Length: 147
Image (tube, rainbow, N blue to C red; front, side):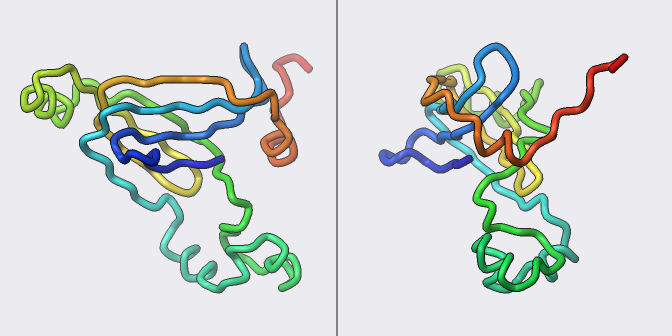
């Protein structure tokens, strides 16, 4: 739903929305003591070219333009797939652990829009709300086996 460095600039936060699992709703994942962060696009080069115009950054403008082919940035959220993974072993985390004298970890967060790799010390989580309307309107679950 959203991601950015928090106001003080040390920690990096993700706002995620899940409609399935043990605790559906919106949750904040805050990675603390971030020492290294790399952001890379996951959108293909050709799709970038198709999606360059300003009509792609506002959903209503994209609809008004006749829904042209390309990536619609104006949905204002990313599909968290393939998702989050720990990088183990991590040479970056080992280097930062040695430099700081604290245990550091590395994770990768991949979506349909971007990939973020970051080195951090810990993760804090908290539930923000029970809201699931965005992901519910944009994602259709696969049927259960045998359905």
